[in-house]
Length: 523
Image (cartoon, rainbow, N blue to C red; front, side, top):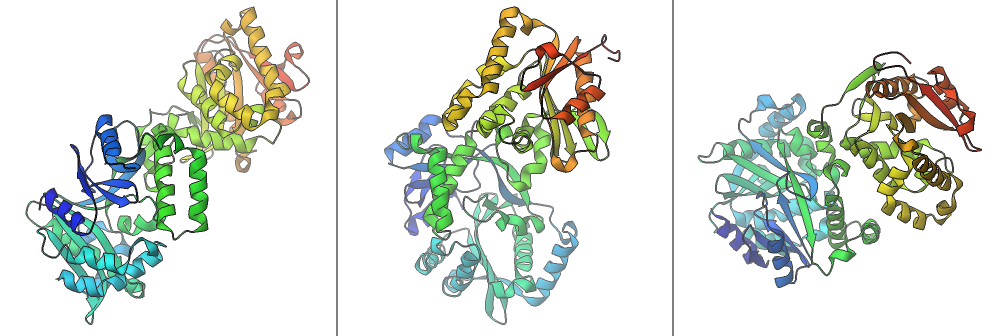
């Protein structure tokens, strides 16, 4: 079957289909078009998308792009390729397949039978996913009957004593079988009907001549996060992609965090409303897709893969099961969360400016030459960090983050007159005027350890690693500021050899200094 046949199926169901240079598109929701065939990974130009939106009066479009395509939220396709056998499955899934195959009959069925008997399965599946209002029985019967005479479409089912227990619709497009619909009834789930049907049909289709792979789904906008877990347990694989959601130029200014917050509230109030759910999902994907991939919230299934894309980390030491390492851009969100949680309200002005400012600040430290961020890691969890610069950092930091600084002050007006913020600005200007910003003295900016990991020597290990880096960089000293009420931090620094410098202190902060020896020597 070619893609024109699939497009004909969509038209028969009443969808409006548009063809552009890179793909086909259909109205998946009011004002929203989605690219198809779903397994295509496309690279449309900006002008193609804008022309599609404006010419056809479309509010937004959604499509899959390659992982290295600019923009778009990190996402996945679920696929399956040969080899595929029972031996590749974990014991639980393997036993489920065997049990299901002994209980159910797997066979190809006519679409007319699926239209009449399959609605009970589809309805029950949508109900379990809290998406019951996304399809009617009439729509279900139409999509089944319109596929009955089209080349490449097949319906498969698992039955028990003549009753349908689960079913799938598959469509062949060149060398790929796509699975646009899969459904089952909850009363058969404990008997492993899905295991049996998925395995048997997948084996059958992969053995067809000219078939390279099976495509099951793209990450959903509105389905529960665990909706794909069964597929992964059955040995299906994920393929890295990025999903893009682009809005019409007239609507783009309204695709904002505030509007998304409203959409999220509406979706929570009426969780079964497909319009609210999809609107929330479209806005979420669009806003997340505008961020660098290092700052996006990755799907849980892909999170373990992030470090494979990050630069190699340098390891300094180990404290029990916690490693002291360099940081990567993929650590930014974890650093911000730990930073925000580690400082009491009113103690740290930068935290009071809000998480957007903290994100910009940590981004500046991680990405700017001459700055250093060291982390304490337990597996892929950040449980501590220290951040320092090879030069006075207050003025360069505030200058680099001025947009977030202004927004933070507008959100929290009292911070604009906070003594610590004014002191940081004034201290930075004094240092610059005196030429102190060129002195080879490192300044420690932030240090935090998760409260559940305090008292285990992690702070001392971070301090020792930062001193080592400063020595390697040929710096002559390290300076740190400590709030006067934080006597524990002051003691930790003094144990590392820091000495208080009263002339630098003020009513809020102690300043301590550690003079370093030559590179390679102990301080």
